Length: 95
Image 1: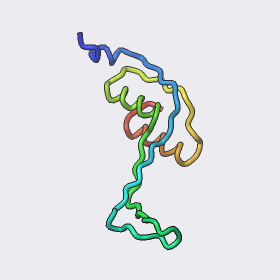
Image 2 (image 1 turned 60 degrees about the horizontal axis):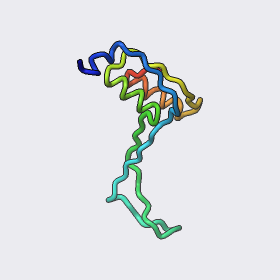
Image 3 (image 1 turned 30 degrees about the vertical axis):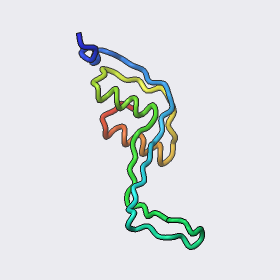
């Protein structure tokens, strides 16, 4: 028997830290030398984010077809907490 065939029947609790992973994309062709530091200043052209830590575990369990997922943890009541909640909802992950 394939262990994933039983996954839709499983109920799994995920206890942990839920936070937002943020990725900054930059274009190296737009880089310039900082007048203040003399070091390269990269120009951010896009910002991406997704659930991280326990949020990533929950997302993976959901993608594998786990029957029920119970989240146990804290999420901030700020802008990043809002983005984390929205990212989870858009992925179809319970929150």
